Amino acid sequence: MAIIIDPIADMFVRMRNAISRKYHEVVLPHSNKKERILEIMKREGYITNFEVVSEEGKPFKQLKVTLKYKGMNQNQSAISGLKRVSKPGLKVYSSSEKLPRVLSGYGTAIISTSKGLLTDKEARKANVGGEVVAFIW
Image (cartoon, rainbow, N blue to C red; front, side, top):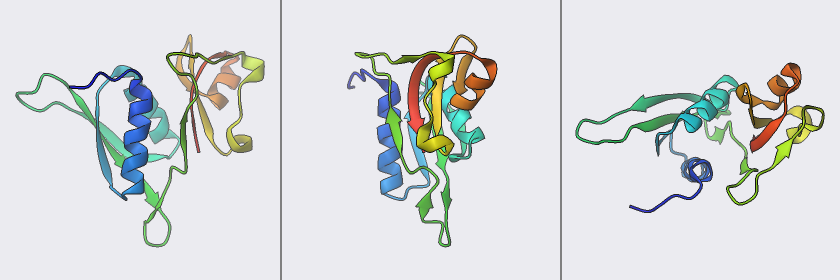
């Protein structure tokens, strides 16, 4: 088994690959942080649903993500782009006054704050800054 240095970036790569192949589901290794990110993505309308799955005989839980497609033939993904901002080798922090806006507010920035993972809009409303985890648009 390969060692994953950045599990969040790995999650985004798997989701991007699934979207490019027009898959409707993708299975990811479970972590609490990934679960919180997926909750935000579901709330913001980027994915349809996700669930935590534990197979019998396997020691690790997995996340089964149902991707969201839109358009006339359901062939255009709701996710246009995913970008990992803060990486293990270079953490990016932002104060509450200087929180980034993704595509002038049309996208979503995920911020890790003292109040948990929040979107940029929620962090501005709560007047908290933190680590800029990712951009989604």
